[in-house]
Length: 339
Image (tube, rainbow, N blue to C red; front, top):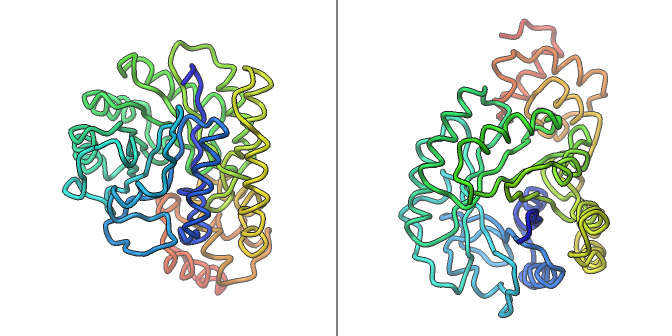
């Protein structure tokens, strides 16, 4: 990888749209095509110790992924994500070069201890360790410094700044970047994973590619922005921008062929991407699932949704379970006092 690298995560983040149900042929073809088109990192799905099915990008064992990877890897690093509740240290098997090269450990603020244990086990088993603390902006700077110091002890391959709710500004990224840059060893890569609730993903990514730093940086993206809610940074857009500003590296024609063959057909029956509902959740710094869950059950106007979000107790902005979202809406509609 050069100073900047792109990480393609359609088969993982796009799985929120399909329940991680993709045909085996599509999984294999997509990984092969993304490798051919020059992507530095390809995330092939989730590790989930409960999964035991075909035609899915949720894999019960690391060895289950090997058959989907191309024999010619070129310069691509293959990754899978592990949620601390779905894949445990004892589920790991030692790196043998036949399956994935690295594991991204994803976790919320209340799961730091579990994430550090899993991260340590990932490294001890020979994989490149990527740490992915969700909702970065939920940490104040002192908390983020403390987290960075703990992660630094693991000497990971990369640590990502994650804009889970899609409202981080360029200045927010730089603030958290400076913390990581000051604390992490020089060899550790810093990543950025964004969502498009306010259509800021491409703006922030372009700024990062223009950012003056000696640190290696990875930017996440997905085909056609496929991902939960407002979706992600679009692979085709950031790859094209990279080519035009930093030199030809990624084959955008191959990316467009993948979108045409696999992603657009999915978009005809499943939806994702920017909407005023996700804009409102970002505007109030709320979890986007307040929109996703509510719109699954009720036809709510944009104006009504805004008033509903205003009724959500602030301490519940980042805590979102579907029964609570629906119950809260029913209280809102009836005029009942919300606590």
